[in-house]
Image (cartoon, rainbow, N blue to C red; front, side, top):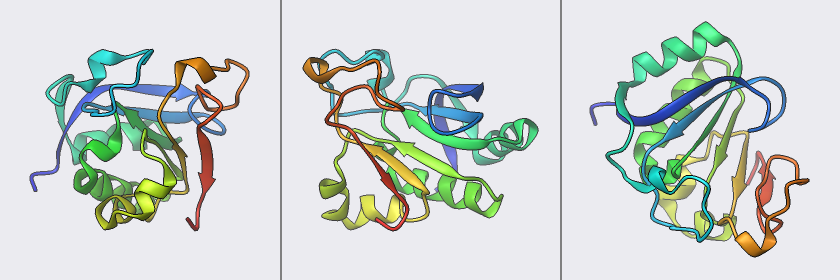
Length: 151
């Protein structure tokens, strides 16, 4: 693994993707194709720009906030995400992961489960436009759940 990530963007100092000020890293690639997705261009795994793990960590350290991984879907490339989460945790960061997979799907798949094993929380489940609720904290639709560590 060359530790290169396709990064759609990095939002510095955001408060919408988890508790407190956070650095949100949006990774390219998603296979869920949720109808009503607010960012369908994120589905392309070749979208964004390549960044090394070291480049990402430099920005995270510069900002000095906890981190949220979103996309796309970070679990589109679970091994890369596992490595990134491990590096972030070793750097003392609280890490949230947004994914279209449900916790049941994650727990049933060893690769997905391992990828998020060090995460502090995941916001799970596909976006469902009919269940969209702008008043939900850190979620887009009411089917999505925030799963805390120890899952």
